[in-house]
Amino acid sequence: MAHTVKALFREDAYLSVAEGTVVAINERGGIILDQTCFYATSGGQPGDIGFFERQDGSKIEIAATICGETKDEIIHVPAANQQLPEIGEQLTLHIDWDRRYKLMRMHTACHLLTVVCPYPITGASVGEEESRIDFDVPDFDGDKASVTEELMRLVEANHPVFVRTISEAELAANPGLVKSKNVRPPSGTGQIRLVCIGEDGTVDSQPCGGTHVTETKEVGDIHIGKIEKKGRENRRFRIRFGPLPAA
Image 1 (cartoon, rainbow, N blue to C red):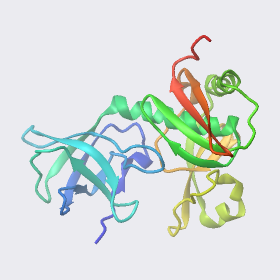
Image 2: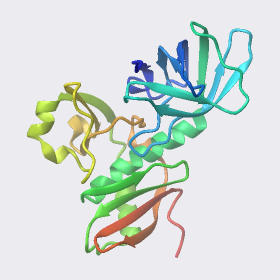
Image 3: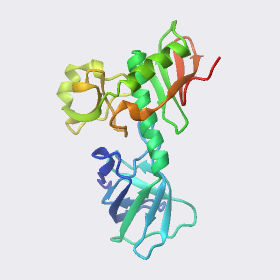
Image 4: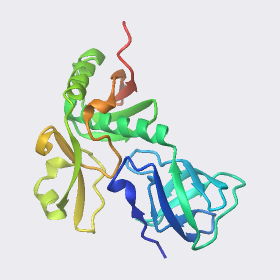
């Protein structure tokens, strides 16, 4: 039976410490809590790592966070040779905040890239130092410098980034909100989580379950490190932190 875990990161992506109670340990030793601030791998964003602090002060190192049978079942995977907690035990959860914040900045940068390059997305991956987005665009006449300039213009404008919820019917009436060519947002709950950029979402609005910063300026210096041709129609854009290196 799948367990529904309250995902605290959906309401507050900046919550780096939280309390949780163990509700189950699965057959592989994965720890399931009643609630968690740990993001589970999904949508191209890696799951959180960190540690759980027990009441005696000892730690359980967490090597990965993944989804179970559903997106609402979040499983914390301990590192090797960790002592497992007891059912009903209360834990203090500590995510690796430096890593998470990099991923939040990167994920927000990926959304900005889809504004600069408004093409169907065929793949994406968010990383700590480099992210990539694959677009279905047969002919692209821009270059790294021009795309970087447009990205940084959006960053420096310091647009607000926020979440709002729409109904599945509203999404069906606005299919252009979905930028992925092959992947549809999870359905069945009646609600769709939109990540919006700009006042009233005027810069961008798209379904996303990931974590993001609240203002685009938090992204910091980013640049396009490489634009690669992947097949006849795909172009892969690699986003990296820091200013564009001099040619």
